[in-house]
Length: 304
Image (cartoon, rainbow, N blue to C red; front, top):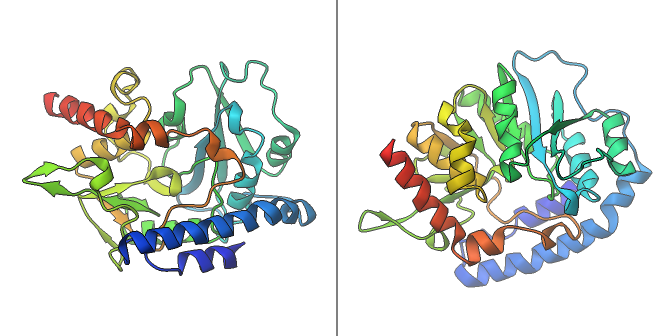
């Protein structure tokens, strides 16, 4: 798979040629996606692996991949998990958080049961915290660990974890992001989300207080660095329930936590199959939901 990703990521920078560059990337992304959708699941089935998590090396810090899902995506998530299992650096645990109210009988598709046999851990929780589930429990329950937040609907390039672990070694106690947007300002005021520099690439590995990490693209967060208020679920359920990235980024920014990006991934990720038919992009981006939630969180943090 990685050669197809390299073909895509080595294409023109998403912001380099303006509208033309973005249009070209969309065309290439559709082409690569069509190929991966058609071939990758067959490759995984025909070339199975016995174990998808690390059982050889004892690391000083545990590496845990954490993601969540819901019924509309549960039948295709196994492909995403296989791309996590087949990383050049394997995680010690891959944890999938599922809410009992959404799966009352705890029944999983056979494709996901096979992932469990290969090392996937499924954790059942009593409350559906939507996309917040992917960080809420892992960052609190694990100690002395690096938590990599992932989405349930993406093809992950096979060096994703290797890049993040390397970055974390160079920048401990920081958030290490695969993909970032850059927040922009006018007259000292934060611009609307759609006016930010999306898929920003600075051409070098660095930190910025204006980086907005997109957690599901692959974001490494050491346990113990986020402020306790991050886990105030009654607040985020009230003001930021549909944008976990907004909540995490603004909490980290308030706490002065550095966000590093290695700028290897400066385009939109490639989604799996039909998974994007159910998504929050329309509500959060196209209809201004991100801006409303950003404003609500900023006002909340200012008042604390």
